Length: 353
Image (cartoon, rainbow, N blue to C red; front, side):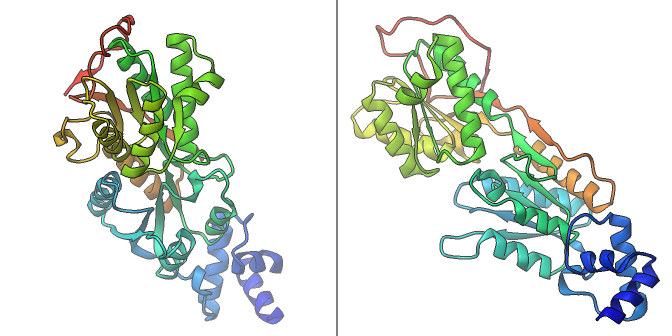
């Protein structure tokens, strides 16, 4: 093995330590140096380790947490179309309960020699997760882009919606309709989008009503699951607290909130207004049509593909987060607060769908 390292190092014009780092997928080796070592392997007739074999130029992996929430298939479709137009073939890998984990799916894609990977709402969005998995992936020479969830522990392009701005738009809209007790239903605290939505929501309540952040989180924020049932449970608690409007962190949760309202014999929007997040396909045709913060899926998906192709092409932009502004789309699930709650000055103008 030592003789082989010496041969490869001599052929590539680098040290044996550098060759060892490349072969073991370690960080700290320049891309040009890494390519020189791999070329030396090929010239000398040595077989590359599986993780270092040439990438399949046409394949790009896309890892999503699930497909039940319609926003994920919508994003996958945008990304798939953008990749296809650039001559690449998307390989969709979806996590399922009791099935493959993100790490297992990543390993499968790397073994198949994909040119790069796009992660949607992955472990990078979990503040409790170990981020060294992404360092290892970069050490294997696999370009990647991360959507929904930012951390400064990973050097890569990030694509995100402006979650804080979305909450400000929702609260301003509801306040303009006279609502003063506005609740927020969202997912577990450990996720970056949840943290940001909470920050945006509590700041909007402070600016609009003078509510302190501590009071807002205690009285008006409920954490649950990103499901219809999770939205129903969170809304039930907020309704018990006297909320006349509920902002939800996903359209699926919003549908659960509407069910919670109706099970009390109340009406949406006459008694309780509900706002979603995403503007998933077909959400405009629910009963009532849902007011929601539209996630800029098309712009985000196309930006993710552009960033990945720049990484693949060897001309990556500096690691940074690209943040896209959502739009509040007003439909039939929001209306004036029930009589007797007092008016609040008109807020920002939003588009009527």
